[in-house]
Amino acid sequence: MSSKTSHPIYSRDATVVLARHETDKFSALQRAIAESRFFDNVELALERTGKPRKDFLIAIKPNLMTASVREGGSPIYTDPQLVEYLIEGLRDRGFRDIAVVEARNVYDYAYEGRSVRAVAELAGYSGNGYRIEDLSEQKEPFDYGGVLGLHVVGKTWRDADYRVSFAKNKTHWQCYYTGCMKNIYGCLPEWDKMKSYHGKGREFYQCCILILDKLPVGFGFLDAWVSADGFAGHVRDGKPNQTKTVLASDNILALDWVMGEKMSLDPKANYVIQEALRYWGITSLNITRSGDMTPWRPWTNVRPLSVKVLDLIEEHYRVSRFFSRAFASEQDERFRPVQRGRWFFGALQKLSKLVERLMVSKT
Image 1 (spheres, helix red, strand yellow):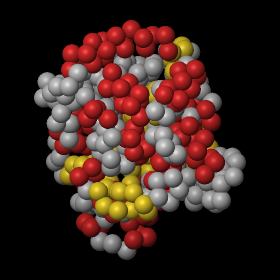
Image 2: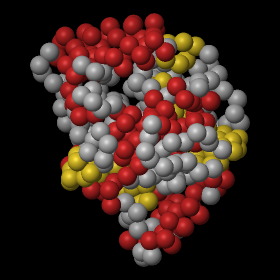
Image 3: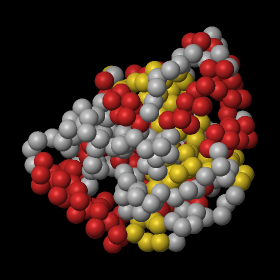
Image 4: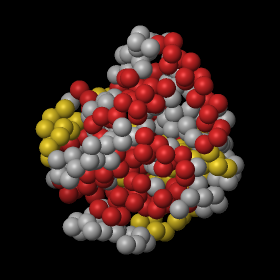
């Protein structure tokens, strides 16, 4: 039983806005911003710090490092145009210290040169009016407690006065789907996440909740304009879903809960949500859903057996490292494959696409 008390941010009553528009993604985001009262939330946080507006550090964490090629309206990473639209609105209100942050990931097993800035450039981030920060280059000691204990943190994420998770709407074989909470797992600075945050007495979802607990997120957005489903939805989807929606809330636990409902899933099946409820001792959530709650159609979820089997595989580092490289997406030519085992793993990546069809269930 958790010894923690309910977290004041994630356990409170919440409204989740689901803003849909048939033709214009910026109109969907603008409606989500307005109806969720995002700017009012930022202003309140500014007032609490007593800082000058220009010195108030806002850190935005998109889903970025799964990008492999530049795609307009990608189904697997947060649309940079939506992130920059949000930043433009903040700058219009006088905020100047704005950072888009990420950390490197397990794609480094298979490819060279995938720094955060290089992938951000590939995806289409301009850096105009904000900076791009690689948390893997900013490691400083930090005590998370729990299974992470004394570890490292990215300085910009630690020092931010206000944190935003701008996630992507997509499935994930580790926990059925990845939302605004799992997105923050990507802020953990070590690139070899299989080694640092899986197995050996710790699980990725425990690490995710620890960083959320110590460094709370003030607001969440979910880019569901174009979405990815299926077994490999977190890294590729050849037939993206035109879901044409942006979700927003000042409670990212509630937002992720509603996200699961839209996928016709029990949100409590998601391992990150399970750990959040356990760690913070939350027995119920009072969520007001503002918008269309019709489940996504068509939609293909990961089979429960696939999630359970792969959870067991992750306990063995060498095996999970092997599969992480074998299932890595083919990259833009600017990221050269690691030479060791290059042809073998290239063949496995092609074979893995055939296997994926067996590991999903349609709704």
